[in-house]
Length: 270
Ligand code: 2HA
Ligand code: ZN
Image: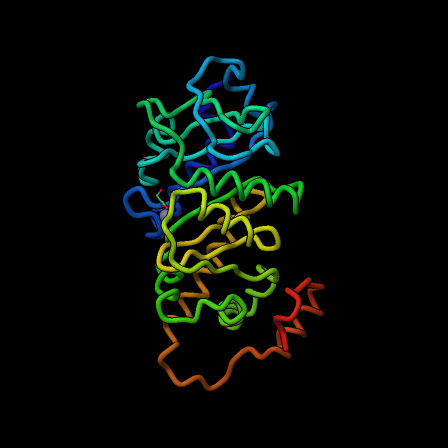
């Protein structure tokens, strides 16, 4: 078996957690990441038939039955992931019937996956149905996105269009728009269902006064999406009380959509 600390997926998730921590998005145990892995990727580093603790998924995850994921642990700090990946991360395998999962590696202090695991798994299922190359779900607490959710309407179209207007490339990075959920209790199945209901046609959902979920075909893609939304929110928070002398108009965005061949969310540009 090769040393798992050299596995590209492990190195990359550690680097991503370090980056996100240093951006100030993942205070204390804030934030969580999960990434689907192929058996061939995992089998080079761990015994995929090893005994392990079995825990309930608490919903029907049969669509991803038999799949492997690397996931951050509940209560763990992003700050510590690259120092102690064996404690802060775990590799799980979803049972074929989707009712439980087995911890194959990691969570060495007896820990468990993130409290947001239901939302992660439900999002993996809807995103895989939308895009067979989907791999990563990332939750984090980006400062300006949270700030914006206090002072901007939570209407999804308005929220999305404000962000699109903040940087020319926003409509290129997320032409599918941003979903927005009002404040809700987190860590349960209800918020998972509500988030997944929006993720079927989008890759990003804001949880008002809490944070954001982003998804993608790689850690970089999910991170890059959230990073772009957060930067746009930062510009919004900087300029919202200033006199606006010029902006990016709907016609401008239509021109970008045409130039880049974008599939912009239906009905969002006048
Ligand atoms: O893992 O961010 O939403 C801590 C959280 C829960
Ligand atoms: Zn959170």
